[in-house]
Amino acid sequence: MSVQKACFVLDAIRGKDVNTALAIVQYNPRYASSVIEKLLRSAIANAENNNGLRRENLYVAECYANQGPIMKRIQPRAQGRAYRIEKRMSHITVVLDEK
Image (cartoon, rainbow, N blue to C red):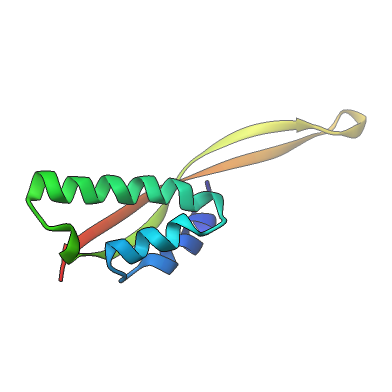
């Protein structure tokens, strides 16, 4: 998914506590929200298990998407032409912190 599509959802959850962020992501109709929900749940589990932080005190300190690799594909067109289709990918980062 492209950086632009991911940033629509990331902008909505930046600075929110994790329970509010999960609620926002669950009811967001965009495809990116399902991917970011999975990432957010993983980040919460890592904070609880690896760092011993409490879920009630966590909030989304930073979240951003950087451009990843681009898969280049060909779409056949009329009269022997070919259009290039770029399937963009992104690296999404979510950082949680305690209040």
